[in-house]
Image 1 (cartoon, rainbow, N blue to C red):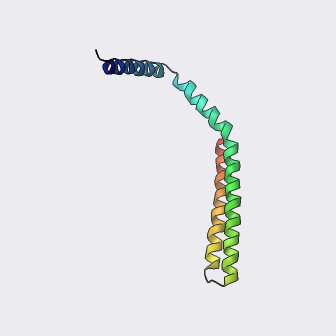
Image 2: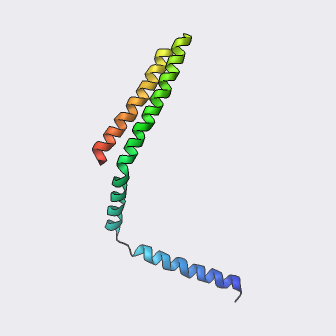
Image 3: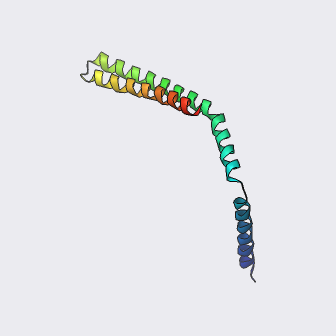
Length: 101
């Protein structure tokens, strides 16, 4: 047996051993652990969504202000789009909190 064949055989045994340990785990315990981890990070994610909404709102306000001062005709449409996106982010964060919080 060459060294290459020996290393391939050991790798195959190692992978077979790992797959057997994976099959031996309890499915309910894994789901409960995943649920606990998601719930622990959830409030941080909601706060991140609020922060992103605030930044997008500030950028939108500056863009609308610049369009308004330059007299462009589509200022109202741009303002409505930016305002709608900020409201959407807040509503999504609130709905997700009511479902998963």
